[in-house]
Image (tube, rainbow, N blue to C red; front, side, top):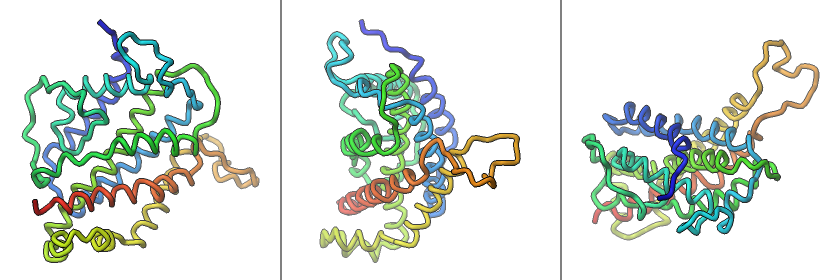
Length: 278
C-alpha cells in the first residue's frame, strides 16, 4: 500500500474547516459575493508569497521523477490527487464553492453532510475549468514570480502550489455564484441573451471596466503591504531613497487578476448563464 505524507494535507484541511464554519450558512447577495471575492484576494496574495519562498524546483512537475510504484504523474499530481481524496472523505466537496482538480479520483465523503444551501441552478454546479487553470498556473504564472533554481524541497513546493491553486480555482469558480445573483436580480436583462445564446452580449453585460481596474489596483496595493518585511525601525517608508523590496513583485498580483482571474471568472459566469434556463 502506498503511504502518503499526511502532514502535507493538515494545513489545507484546517483552513477548509475554518472556512466551512464561516460559509456553511451563507446567504448569497451581490454584497456578500463581492465581500467573498475581496477576502479571497488576501488568500491568493499570501499564496503567492508562500510559493515564492521556493525556487522553481522543476522536478516537482516532472512526470518521470517520483518513481512511485503504480503512479506515473508528477509529484504535484500525486500531492493534489491524494490531498483531494483525503479532503473529499472529510466532506470538502459537498460545498459547491469547492471544485476539485481531479473529480474523477474522488472517494465519497465519510462524514455526515452539512445541508449546504443549494443556491446554484441544477446542472450548472458541475462547471469546472480546473484543467485550464492547472496549465496556465504551471506554464504561465509560475515563471512570472518564482526564481529559477532547485533547493530540493519538492514536497513543500507541491504543498504551496496546492494551496495557491485551490485559492485561484475558488476565486474563478465563484463566478457561478456571482452569475446566479446577477441573474436573480435582473432576469429580464439576461434571459433574452441566454435564449439567443449571445455569448458576446452576456460578456458585455457582465463587464465593468472601472470595477476591474479598481480590483487590479487594490490587489497590487495589498501585495505591497503584505509583501514588505516588518521592522521596528523607522525606515519602513524608505525615506533614504532605497528601492523597496517585496516578497513578491506587486505587479504580479495585478497581472494575475488582469490576465487570468478576471477574464476566467467572466468565462465561468457566461458558461453558467448559458445553461441557466436548461
